[in-house]
Length: 147
Image (tube, one colour):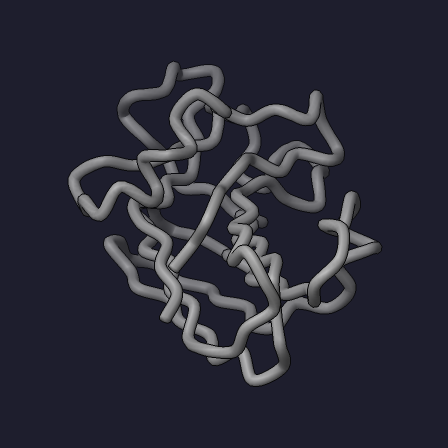
C-alpha cells in the first residue's frame, strides 16, 4: 500500500489543498483530492501539480490513480529509495503519460524498477462547475493505490 501522500506544487507556493490529500487514499471513489481552481487549463505555465505517494520503501508493483476530472493530461513519475525529488527536473522523465477526454478514468503503471516515490501530476485540467467563472479549471484524484 501507500504509507503517506502529500501535494506537489514546486512551481507555485509549494501547497495544493494539503488539507484534503488523505481523501485520495481513503478507499472511497466518492471522495477526492483536488487541485485549486485555475484560470488556465494548462496551469498557467506550471510543469504540473499533483500528489506524491510514499510507498514506505522501494518496491515493484502496479500503481493506480483514479482520475475524476476531464479532459486531462496526467503524468506519473517514479523515483527510487532515498529523498523525494524536489523539482520536476529531479523526477526526470515520466514513467507513463496519459491523455484522456473522459472521467472517471483509471490510470495504471507497472513499476518494474524498485520505486519508493510516485508522483501523479496534472499537466492539463478540465472545467469544473465547483470553480468560479474566472478560474474554471481543476483536477481531481479520487483514489491512489499500489499493489
